[in-house]
Image (cartoon, rainbow, N blue to C red; front, side):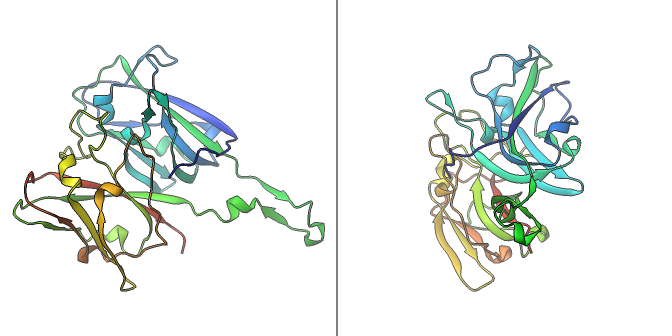
Length: 293
């Protein structure tokens, strides 16, 4: 969903140097300037050759193996989000995409995982930009008779967005209906959007991998696959083309749902034919949900 008219109160950038080609997890440092802020966008700068500490920017091949987890106290807000989806350009012009909408307290509990670190180099760094808004309470000057502190209406109505990954594996290449797992965490969650991480862009050349180093299915499969979701209210999402949910460099689009509660074990992916199916490859979904009661 294109949102190019957002306003921000500030930006904090952080550099994370690569330590070795064996370490798989990197925690963010303590970033006091982000604590208590509403994070609106996270981006990886395009076109840079060096970081402020004169390190080489991490390669695209390595970036495709990196996944971001955001933790607030003990609550995981964003879980294993592909960092390559934060690295965008159109005709070599950087586009910063709004994907997030959450408050942040504990940056040092957040981390990045690499599914396979063997190609990493100590000469590289990750360089991440966090765009934020302040959380400001103020006394209304327009309604002095109310005599109470109110919160900015935009913040008052905001639902903090959460993101959780859901992996669906192809185990039998002779079946064209692949059912979702019964993920206990997602039961009764209110789904607001679903994205797929897939090789759909002409700019993507290397094979994409999931956090546990499984190969993400080929572009040809997404072009003939359909989403069938059984909802708890009896309605269905029936044969929604998966390529409408895939991340694409050229089109920054998102389909928004009205707090769907999905019966996941009764929901599945329908694949039109068996050609090109490969066992042990996976669909990698990002479920955006509301944590509001």
